[in-house]
Image (cartoon, rainbow, N blue to C red; front, side):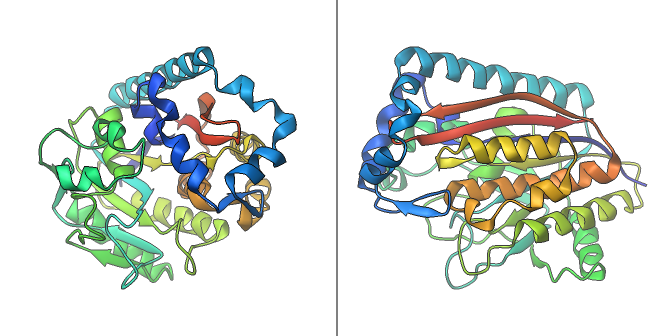
Length: 336
């Protein structure tokens, strides 16, 4: 039977692929946003500044802090790459999310397994780049190759996962072709492109993308449902009649677009202690906007708990970009 030899979770936010001197580019968009979710409430930018005025966040947005935290993130990513290369798995299953790169309002499934034999990815066109928000185009290199590429899927494992999940009472959506979504991206979502580029260094092994709708109501799966999906995925992989060595990735998180260190610590502490109850008691209203991507880590954590693999926290780096606390808290973890 197949063996799961590695679990790995990493943030994929644009700030990871943006020079630290340019981290402030997106603040103009933060200021215009009138609906920042934070700890169950909604704030405009000025309201968020007022709410967090006693946290001393101005100290977190100095050039020295930006440079140091950027360096810490790059070192953590390098460490994850070292672990991945040393493990040398045959196949990967990648749990991530879509941000209208594939699915839009006419069809937005909660869970999808892609089982096509090819996975396309490529750079945005100049027209697509011109329509991106501030601070996004500069990060393209982190998840999009300089030219169109086709990476190998794994149709056999993908089909096995679909059948096994259906038998396990998950009415999973399946796809053999990548939808075109809203037309602002070309190919697989950036959650997967980041793994291909930053961890696999464009030498992509056959893989099966598992796509969750973490962002968009009304059919966002709960944390508890994501945990059940993970347990079912783990059973499916280890019941696959193959001698393949499989790595399972989670891409996304931690808290953003408003950083919530309390939320992140609760998640990381629960994962470190392998405490499912603590993880699942976090209120659903904390998993909104970019912070919803933490739900990509939950299926992976369920798989790792069932295998009793040890977690290593490589680093946790809250990367603030404004006095309102906007930015991206980065997490880097692996299990073996």
